Amino acid sequence: MSSISLQARNVTKSFTSGPIHNTVLHNLTLDMHAGELTLISGPSGCGKSTLLAILSGLQRPDAGQVFALGQDLGELNSHALERFRLQHTGFVFQGFNLFPALNALEQVELPLSYLGLAPGEARRRAMASLEEVGLGPRMGLRPSELSGGEKQRVAIARALAKEPGLLFADEPTSALDAANGQIIIDILHRIARTHGTTVLCVSHDPRLVGHADRVLAMEDGRILSDRVPSPTSTPTSGLEEPSA
Ligand SMILES: Nc1ncnc2c1ncn2[C@@H]1O[C@H](COP(=O)(O)OP(=O)(O)OP(=O)(O)O)[C@@H](O)[C@H]1O
Ligand SMILES: [Mg+2]
Image (cartoon, rainbow, N blue to C red; front, side, top):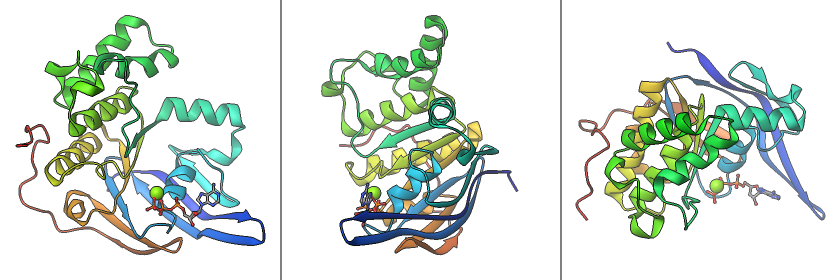
């Protein structure tokens, strides 16, 4: 069994707006393992994005603890937490969040400069990450020249190039068709296995379930089930060109 890399211990989170007090996460305890892709599914509003935000240190819980790569995030002040997130976490979103004016290589290189990497090393890592997601030949293209699936692969390369221990993806396939969605989930799965990354992915899409190592079903801020899915047909390499 791989090592535990991310833990939530009795995490509770509420939001208050006016007279309404909404408890979004109820005393949630969870262990995640390095080298695994964990998929979180559940209805809209059940707390999936809030859970991701808390596990990644973007938000703080009201009560409970998060241990990420052995670090108790509650012990870090906001500056140290920011530093931790920069160094150890990568994020992929539904909407890609790419800069229109930059080509794929520049999108991936840019955050590496914040990590203090020398330009040569940043370029080497950026190119290797783009190769890894199958975009080597397209690294000179801007977002307007890329398909949706390719844009998401640029966003994954951008997260991967930081070599993060923890990779979070919030609905990364929602804007894509089924074929591209499966390519994306298979790339995320392969990153978990080959780099030992802990990958946490939120998705509504039931077709992705068989591509994960573990599936957590959430409802009303609680984990209802925690299971290992039966695998789908032969996993793809994730690098095939979509037919459309
Ligand atoms: N900053 C906030 N202030 C107030 N309420 C919030 C805030 N963030 C989230 N919520 C509330 O918390 C609940 C859970 O939100 P969350 O975004 O975690 O759901 P989700 O499961 O990701 O939903 P979706 O599938 O629609 O993305 C919702 O009722 C939402 O309105
Ligand atoms: Mg959400």
